[in-house]
Image (cartoon, rainbow, N blue to C red; front, side):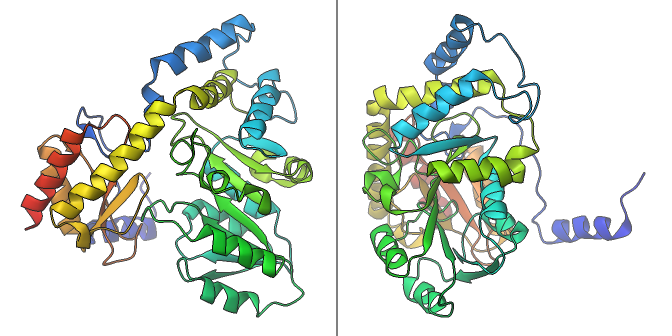
Length: 378
């Protein structure tokens, strides 16, 4: 059966705008595109230890068998959530099946009717989808602009206000002034919620994330940690008070109405977290590669192209879907896997090449790809 005509037209519009999304094929190119910042997804040690843990504890089970509230709450969940809470110096942790599920579940359940959500305009789609599901009113503030945020706060006296941001933004790789944001939220008794998807495994002595590294984590309402990036596996956790965990178990629909993660998935999460405590050298190597990338792009005169970032995400603005796709293809033809980010994922005119830096990238690879970029652009 064919698609309805209006859906066919939407696809045709994407094709005409050169913005049609397609699943990429697997390749053996040098990785500058994945979120596997410290290489845990490829870690043979994590793989073997996670498997060994299951065998040793006789958890020979392929699936969770149901939602966690029915039959899927296997013993490994409590062990892993306790470890995560201790690792992050949090009262509690509640595991969700993905970062998307965590954001949709949290924002769809926590802010109530007559509450107000103020969110950064560049917040991830999963945050915005959760906000849409909420009964609260929502308003966006200009990216990392706390004067604009305070202007909005003052419009809603005597109102429960949730402020939402990310510690590293997924498309720009930049960060807000988190100390200033915490002070502002405390000044007006707001509930600050931060998404730390791109800081776990990247910032902090043991990759604990940016809020904890800055010692601000005990002054906010909730942190959302995602495991599909720095941990190289799957899932996410909401960190907060014991009461918040209890509330989410009772009201977060993406937690309640879904089959739990398999014991193997949770074992991988636990093992990856344990590795963060022992694999400090790979975290340090990632930091050094980020510094080297920034130094080289400056030396090669490429700095004006890039959004300012000290994270593992480095974005070079190349306006126009056709232009950025062509440039990405040229780099891929030379053996480097860099993906173009097209509109409407980013605003028109803000299309970009998104370079993801890893601990396993060599300085030679970083230098080569930046030299190629300069040759193709200039």
